[in-house]
Length: 225
Ligand code: 5RP
Image 1 (cartoon, rainbow, N blue to C red):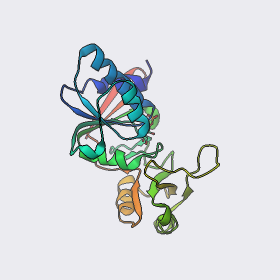
Image 2: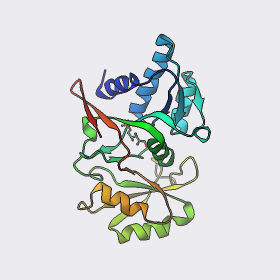
Image 3: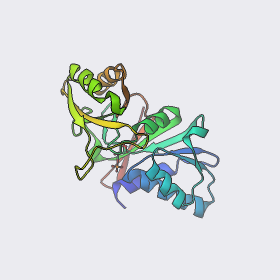
């Protein structure tokens, strides 16, 4: 079992009968979904799930989990997802999988948002390893790019992996990947990006995390907010 699997199995133990559970997106979230399916079939655990992406929704359906549409819920007990970076104050960078809007909605709405990582995701500052993904309407991207440049951010629209077009999110937005000066901490950047008109959502998750479970060398470190 690798570190991602280990934390995913550990987080799945937090799910109790009757819960509504938010499913994240990515390889770690996939391990969590698989472990939930195992607990449902082997332990008769009863719960419902809401997905942050089409990919995770399809996986949940294939494994026989009871899936609710996000438009039908007014809250959830638990949301469990991975992250691309985690700073010491538990600010996160997310969204390489680019379904930012649902991810942040669920992180905010959940009674408890648990983040699962391995040690490679720990950083001193948000933006250390990846640019910040910023979701924009197609008509707004140039003006947002200009506003972002005014606060020290430089970047461009995300291309598809084989570079033959632009990435479009499941609800028709484009994604700007923007690198910022290293002197801007994640929380400051979060506040500045929140104030720019035309940004639908961005990948900095500040003040939303209840706990981070980090798998390393066969063990799990827990950091609670
Ligand atoms: C998707 C995310 C993922 O949680 C993040 O990319 C981590 O992925 P993985 O678990 O595959 O390392 O934010 O938008």
